Length: 592
Ligand SMILES: [Zn+2]
Ligand SMILES: [Zn+2]
Image 1: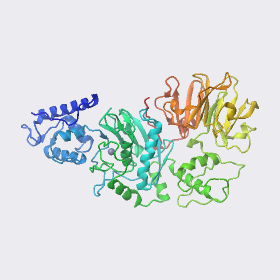
Image 2 (image 1 turned 120 degrees about the horizontal axis):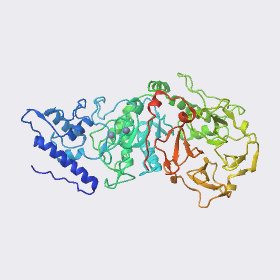
Image 3 (image 1 turned 90 degrees about the horizontal axis):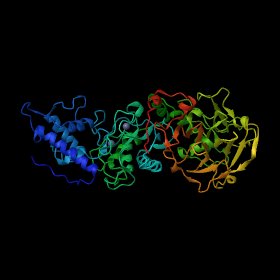
Image 4 (image 1 turned 45 degrees about the horizontal axis):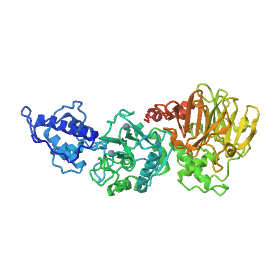
């Protein structure tokens, strides 16, 4: 027997390991069959390839996976067809012979989604995986990220990838901080919550689920945390380019299966960072799936209900009505918000507290010519998250959102009689104030510090103290800062932290001074996004909040505890979960 020669060099440990695997495969395979194709003398017409090869072929759909026996006998023709198909999806000559190139293909880095799936439609030039999204506005949630790439890069690259697909599909994507999103993007290692464990470094890099596939996971994208992820890596030995993999996986999330055409984004094997745009077939598929198809709002609502009925519909309607509202002539001193311009809607909602309820299903959004009266602000839906501030004050937890305050019981349920208006608790606040953006309890005298806009107040339970209100600049904060996002006293080092605009300050309560060399960048808080909504320490436990998620923070190791972030509204307020949300309460651990 002649050993095959390989055209890749044994550069490092990883490649050496892969080379050994090939050697093992060939040894095992050839010890049983000598050369391919061949019939075993004891059972004519049958061939028994090595278990690794059988496993690969079953995993990616080339052989029927219903047999649980990896040593099962397959008919020679079935194996040959499988090899031909495997070669087709690797853009190799379809010889049906397991040659060097084919074996090397099998150990190349690739996507974990099967190449051949009985559910997909085969009658088109491009290949559609399963169903398409039944709506045009799709929300995504980045549950965690790899420290090798970092939160900002993961967020930027995902936004870039969504943008590429958006151009050819007319779908609108919006990042939310809520696990109820349509698409959850997450990193996981080995077993990570679904039935498709990752495999350590190399081979499978990521996988994704088709829209509505497996119900709870539909649309989700998982990246193998054990890969050596890198930004703009042109050499696989240096690392795997994150963006290249993200664009491909997103194709699955939108309903596309693998393509055997090498130039397609949906080619199953890793091609490096060269390709930054869609190929003809990818564009054609998007056109057929999403542009030729018609959508309307009724369609949106019904399909949402059919697929688990979480709160998207209400929120989408909410966005539209808010948008319409903002463009009516009666809205004075407001910047115009364009239909579908998601980026401005959250800030709009937060500023104006215009939370509305879903309209009747079959009617179009109605224009509302008048403002809600200023005297009775609409109570924001606390179960949507996006809290302004969370603080423990004299043993009770208070949550601030818009012009309202919620107080929680020991068991994290809303206390009877709440919410109350800001002025019920703080009668000294000016009437024009829209919200309390941050708050914390001072550790030594149990006074409460509350922030709104460029001012802060110190409250002792009866009246204002410390000559407040004062301006943020009196604390040594730059005058350009419009408001503080979050504030907390950190028991770990007995300092107070103020957060705003991707930076934070550290304040010394003993000396009543801001410490020198601040502000510093939020990246110092491992595992947290660059901006947060709220933060608080209760006893020795520290929590950070963003959208509808929160992190319990490990103060010793300066990173989130395992299993975080989790859904805030369920854990903190007892807001009910739909069945779909319950299933989706799986956890990802972020490594640092
Ligand atoms: Zn794929
Ligand atoms: Zn997964």
